[in-house]
Amino acid sequence: MNSTTPFQFLPPHVVQLIVNHIVGNFRLVYDKVVVNSREHIILLRPLLWVCRNFCAISLPLCCSNITLDINYVETDSDSDDSESIRGDVDHCPPPYVDSPNDYVGHHTHHLARHLFIDVGEESIYSGAAVSVLQSPTYCDTTFPLARKLSVHIDMEQLEEDYELYDFDDSDEGNTSEETTENSTPISAEVEANIVSFILRIKQMAPMIDRILVKPRNSGDSRQISCPNLNYLVSQLCRLSQSIEYRIHGEAHVPVVFQLDGIRDLVDIKYASVRGASKFMQLAQKSAQTLRSLKLHTFLCRGAADLIEDNSGGYVTYPHLISLTLFHATCISDKEEPTFEGAVPFPALKSLCTINSYPFGDDTPFRGNKATLESLTIHLGDFAVSILRKHNVFTPTSHPKLRHVTTTLKGYDWHDEAAGSAAAVKFALGIGTRATVRSIDNPRSGSALTQAISSLSDHTCIQVLEVPLVSLELWDFFAIIKSLPLLSDLAVSSAGLGALPTGVTPEELPAYIVSTFAPMGKRFKCWHIESFRHLGYAEDAKYALLLALACPNFTWVSRLSSHRKLFTEHLVAGIASDMFKDYALRLQRLLLQV
Image 1 (cartoon, rainbow, N blue to C red):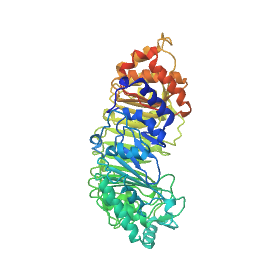
Image 2: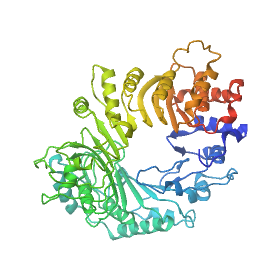
Image 3: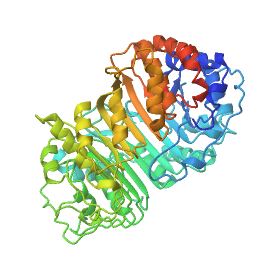
């Protein structure tokens, strides 16, 4: 961990508290610890002593919870400032606090990089949110490092604010315009409260440059025209050049936006089942400035709707670097464009698409073979035909391509090993220039090892992630030997397998360390989801041994019912005779159980 006390220098009682309270008392969701009570705040104090980069705060506008990200650094590809916005807390534990709000107000706000505001009963529209932010608790509070603002909105609590309209899948764009024109106008009072809220946020967090809006689904099957939310989103767009709109949960209700006055954004993200037409228009209006676009939706034609304007011409995005298109193609009366002679994305470096090979003669990306550095293709039912047709890249046709991801889901190959080999070859097919980020299949270790063994000319692969694969411990050794430059490896689970010839169970720990240590030191990341067919005492022992062999080894187990048992074995393992000789080598131990 960065900016932490090395593990071997921690007092034993702190180690005990950290392990026990993290795995036994906190509800972990990836990097986040959700603190629900005063008791948890007190229990968190030993953790504060070690992990000192708290950076996300949930302002308690309608709930008492505090969300804290521990040692989390934004790693968005378009973010260059993540390393420069760190901060430290004093080494001593924080003083006793009477409530979670006191803790937030006095101990973490100066480190916050991400503000969460949950709009419920105390609404932005009524002015209650501004009153809270101007109260004594927050009147002198600033968030100088905060760059991102998330506004979460409960649509069920705002039902008086919106109107419902029947949604016609076949005419989404016209429906949006008609409902927008007929919607009730925003009141002067609500408009003033929203403006006051925006101004207060700018005072508290002057560096905000990314906005996330997450309306929670109302549960209705019709379209929402919500003038208050509409105006709020438009004002948030003016606060930042980056807007992300994401329906929370399994939502089917889009919000109709009036975004006509918004343009020149640099980053747009939209995720909703329907209602993408307004954001398509927003992207076209920002075409000259847009650098990143992510679109997850149905009822659109993907790149065709993004590029083709109302007059039948093409829109060019001269500075767009990153594009993600997850969409289900809709039935449309419009004739599919041919893109003949068009290069709509001349600067594109990163492309993520689904169920399509992007470099065919009829796609708008055929002109990007020389610019792409990262390619992600998610393949479903058409995986077999696509892999058979396009399973080889050549370094000359894609000179800058380094990162290739193939995700294969929903396919039915009778010969799993052959299918797995095809998947691996597709991802590694650009030769020694590749860095492979992820392969969701093959599903068995034997298929993976067979595929890798056939790739003798791909020995400079650096990153291999195979989330669905379960390997024996000795398969790791074979893979590492086959790929001498491999520095990142992640799999779902590992089993011990048969003992090596001539090695007794008593000699196994020393054998593991001596076998893996020479190669493990070159790893930046070695990640195993869980061990299988082992008792929890064995889990803890082998996790610690591999951590010794590879300083950046991480192990994640999600079997929460055995947290306490595993914790006992882990602490016992650290103190055991077998482990004590190696304990001083351990610099980093990441557990998520």
